[in-house]
Figure 1: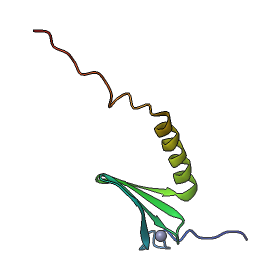
Figure 2: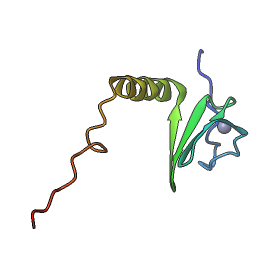
Figure 3: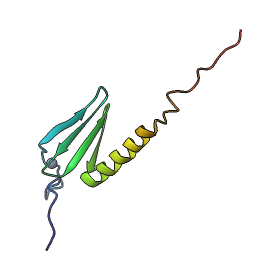
Figure 4: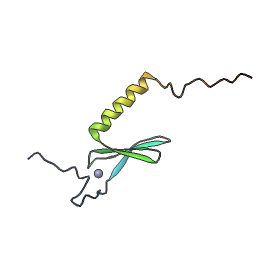
Length: 84
Ligand SMILES: [Zn+2]
């Protein structure tokens, strides 16, 4: 009662084929979504993460919050100055 399979894994423990649609794309990363499984796939370079919708949305919130804070200290670090 109330139990529903996600459809992500079958009885053999093998991953079923997902009908993923591309929902976002940039130079180095992309996001696809399988509406059947309610799962997002986050692709960053050669790495991909399979995240349930709730977790993915939570992750997005964190990224957006960081982005809006514009706190990119790593990429804005001062270059090392060598004295001659
Ligand atoms: Zn799927």
